[in-house]
Amino acid sequence: MNKDINKKYDLSNDAVLLIDKGHHKIYWVGTTSSEALRSNIYLIKDKREGIIIDCGSRGEFQETIKRIKQVIPLTYITKVFANHQDPDVTSAMVDWLELNPNIEIITSPNTNVLIKHYMKEEEKYKYFNTETNPSLTLDSGAVLEFIPSPFMHAPGAVTIYNRHTKTLFSGDIWAAISLEWKLLLEDDFDKHKEDMDFFHQGYIASNKAARNFLINFKDREVTNIMPQHGSIITQENVNKAFAYLKNLKCGMDYFREISDEELSFIVND
Ligand SMILES: [Fe+2]
Ligand SMILES: [Fe+2]
Image 1 (tube, rainbow, N blue to C red):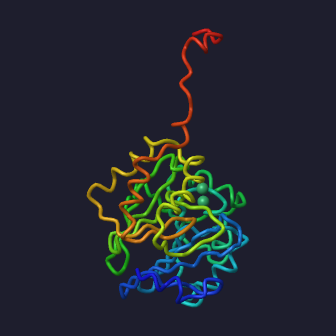
Image 2: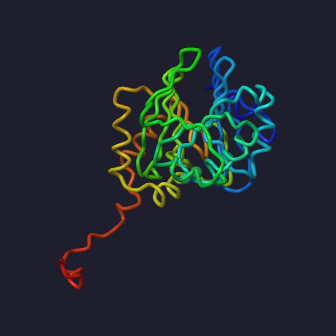
Image 3: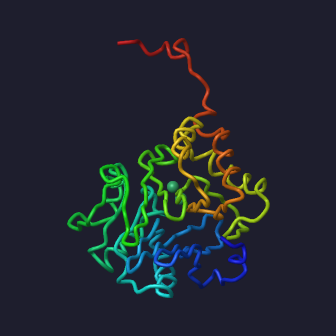
């Protein structure tokens, strides 16, 4: 990915072409809210099919479809993927299903149990289970692998590894929160770490969870990381991003051990 992307596009308006492999393209169609927590939404266009990765908030739905219409007809959208159930990630599924009730929702069973609650009781949708179907082959031959990332941060969180483009759609992992923002991360990874720290220390369960996720990439080459908040991490920083997670202290790592003695007020049954 070329850093010119940061200058070439009007982010307040445009759908941004990130990766172009002919029949298989990846676009950014997210939001540019002035708040520090803005959402990245991605669109995979594979031949005549569109897949939305983390469809975002209901309040931002109109902005999202305005961008998508610049590159494909809305009727191409057949699937919406949900990394986890948070409203900033998934609540706009309601609007997508209103637009087209045939859209399939791709997510883990744990997440699916929760996102059902965005819908009215009688409203059903097609569900693609990432646990029973750990990969999806698209028309062009490109393969999406669904890689669970439990407790990073949601128990049922699942990421996508796009084998064709070596892209990792990571959801809230490597999310960064800052007022200033560039779509593609440029030189300053140390500054970016600070923007990631705030989110990771509070939301990611533990270093053990992070390492259990990282082991999935021993034999999978990742050349770009597309998180749900903050900048896209391109090839030159991927190893730094992995090292950041490998050494991350977060969540329960900060809990203190409570001994049996301290809990002696509770009688063992
Ligand atoms: Fe989240
Ligand atoms: Fe999020």
